[in-house]
Image 1 (cartoon, one colour):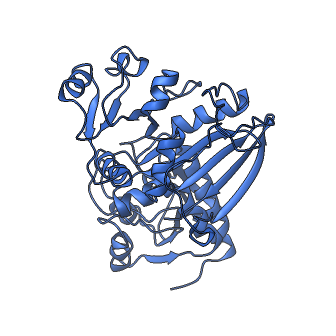
Image 2 (image 1 turned 180 degrees about the vertical axis):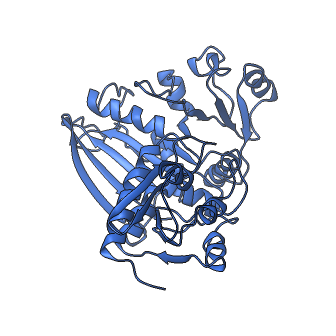
Image 3 (image 1 turned 30 degrees about the vertical axis):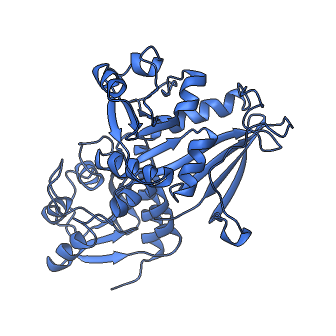
Length: 373
């Protein structure tokens, strides 16, 4: 198998760039971009634009219509599919177009894929080159929600919080509006629009009566709202329940929840998930298993501290994005961003794989990737 050339690297980088245009539009499918080239020349390019729509490879082939693709090279950010799903297999379209070489940035860890498409292409005489290094890493990081869901069946979890310089998310009386600035809140709404679900605990739901919607221009679909509410205390008069028939709402309850309360929530349009397990961390994993089985591939976890701590204890926080605001609260009983059990020794602490910082308005955004899938 030949190594990728400098030209290959440039065209593949373009395919990864194209893939990002599908962010928030194709969940829970992966973002994919494709370029068809012959040496320096680009003959066609495309990306996966909508869930259920043509895949990136097919879009690139359509864009190259009328040109001779015999022996051309296809550059794609994710290995081509070989199964019938919402669309036909891309391997068939590649063979029919006469493409003689395929350069791939990253594997597809799904059970029905995982190298099968590349094997089919090789069997048909197509040269296949799989990249490694920086481009492969970029392509994998682009689709962390898809990769985790494919490997574990659970959603990828992004924990977001806004805190003061002394690490507090609310005063001792519970006041938290607003710690972060307007620019940070707009960005958080963008993240909501890019995830399949937004999750909070019942404490946040009762205190704030939130909508948990993405209230920014250009939103294609609203995320599912998820409330972890072990005793089914969410009021039927809450904004979440009032909108449940138009914007999906899931309430995660325990066996201790009164049947009358769960039935009432269901009658008003909420989906009920019964989380089982001997403790809170086990119930978090149980809920994530069920949400993942319902095609939820990514969750924006907005807290509060009790629920966030339970997710961390369960080992289910994949990335953190923390806004640090230029203010100090003080106070022994002011709220911390994460509660839960935590660890006894520094050596047992969860360590970030990467750390990035940027200014957002008056705030500082710290992004920490905790795991790579």
